[in-house]
Amino acid sequence: MVKIRNIELGEFPVLLAPMEEITGVAFRKICKDFGADLVYTEFVAADGLIRDVQKSTQKIDFQQDERPIGIQIFGNNELAMCRAAEVAAEQNPDIIDINWGCPVKKIVKKGSGSGMLQEPEKLVKITEAVVKSVKIPVTVKTRLGWDEGNKPIVTLSEQLQDVGIEAITIHGRTRAQLYSGTADWTLIGKVKENPRMKIPVFGNGDVNSPEKALEMKQKYGVDGVMIGRASIGNPFIFREIRHYLETGQLLPPPTIHERIELCKTHLLNEILYKNERAALLEMRRQYSGYLKNIPNVKPFRIQLMEVGDADSVVAILERLKNG
Image (cartoon, rainbow, N blue to C red; front, side):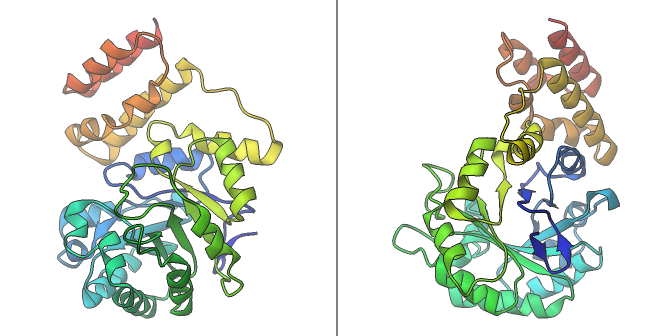
C-alpha cells in the first residue's frame, strides 16, 4: 500500500497532474470517477494567494468527493511560499504540493517552477520552510534538472526528503527540453533505487497508455505514475490503466457515443463552476481528445472552436453523434 503519511493511495496509484486551465473542479471530478487515485488543483501563484486575488483563490476550491486532493503552489520567495501554503492549508486539502517543475517561460524567468532548479540550495531551503509552516503533508513535483549538463535529481530528491517532504513526482525531462523529445525515466529509476529514499517516488512524462504505465512500474520500480497531457479530453485513460494493471487485459476503447456524451457532461459541469465563456474557452483544449479518431470530424471540430454558447456546442456534438 502506497501512503503519503496516513493517506492510502492503493498498491500502484495513478495520479492526475496539475495543469493550468485544465484541472478545474469539473475535470478533476470526472478523472476521479474514472479511477484517478489522487488529483491536484491547477497550480496557483503564491503571490496571488497572499493578495487574495480572486482567480487564484478560486483555483484552490474543491469538493469533498474529490479527496484525496492536493493544492499545488509555486513561487520563489520563502516568506511568500510559506504564507501561501498556510492560506492553502486553511482550505483543508490532504496535501500541499510545491511546483518546482513548470517549464513555462513566464514562470521560469521569475525564478519559479523549474527556474529554481538553477538554485538547488534555495529550492531546498524554501521547501524546508514550507514543510515547517503547515501541519499537513508537503510533496514536490519537479524535473530531472535544468539542462543536459545539470541533472541533480538523485541528490536533490534525497535532500528534499531530508527536509521533510513526504512524496516526490519527477517528470523525466529537463527544463531545457520543455515537452519535446522523449521523457527519460532512467534517473527516476535511480532515485527509486537509492536505498536512502523512503518516501513514494512517482514518475511522470509520456505515460499515455496502459502498457506504458505497466512498463514504467516494472522497469523503473516507481510507486505510481502521474498522467498529464494524455488525460486531456481522455479521462478514460485512468479506467484503462487501472483495468490493465489489475487484469492484464486491455479494455476496448470508449465508443463514439460515450466520448461525445462525456464531452457534453464535461462542458455542462464546467459551466456549473465557471461562467459560460470561461467554460467554453477551457473546453477548446479538450475537444481534440474527446473526438480523436472519429471519422470526418474536422469540420465539426472547427465549428466547436468558433461557436460562443453552450447550446450551440451541444447541438454540434449531437449532430456528430448521430452521424
